[in-house]
Length: 175
Length: 81
Image (cartoon, rainbow over all chains, first blue to last red; front, side, top):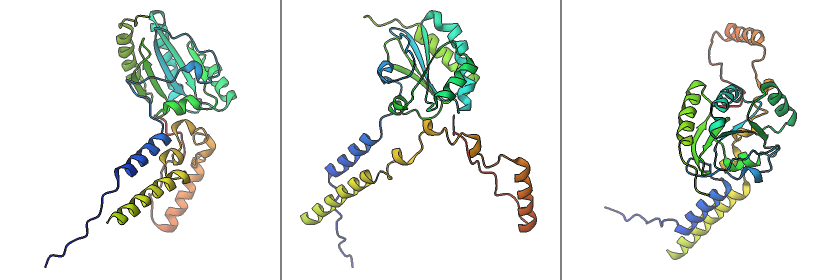
């Protein structure tokens, strides 16, 4: 004997859509290649934001308590020496809440590129970096083209060199 | 059937509202984000700051329990990279 099983009605579409929209509102979208970083000048960063108009920009999120970040600074210094004259701007954004830890790190490393601090961690929360450090390579038009979660020594530096060369070879957009 | 559907819809909406309002059910609220791990990276968060002491304690456990292993899970760090 086959008994008829009661049909379970599917949840209404609007409830599922509302739940998805609520979750999307709670979880900010991660900045990824193809997207754009929030404007740095309006992010409340401590320090002077360098002029990036029409330039290739490497934005790196780092912290003084992060060991791979420490390892990345000499590599970024080499990239700065090699490509700054051709139009690369490196901006290292610290997520340190402690101003003294930030200052001590910068004093020790003496980076030749711009370092800023995100004191309220507002920018990094908007960007939603997946790990520390994470760097974003932005093209002359202001679009994020490459993203590097973590710093893996020579491998990351090699990849960055290739990507920077490619982006520097692209024409700047017409004003 | 219509009443059951309405009741389920109401239940789903209430569930979603509760999940959002309690703030504990969303990964954004629960997970320590990568940029918030300064305290975890502090040296004082490392449970194995005294390697000699750890070795001696392990030796005591080994002698008493006649077993070894099962130890060595990392306890601190920023989880970078």
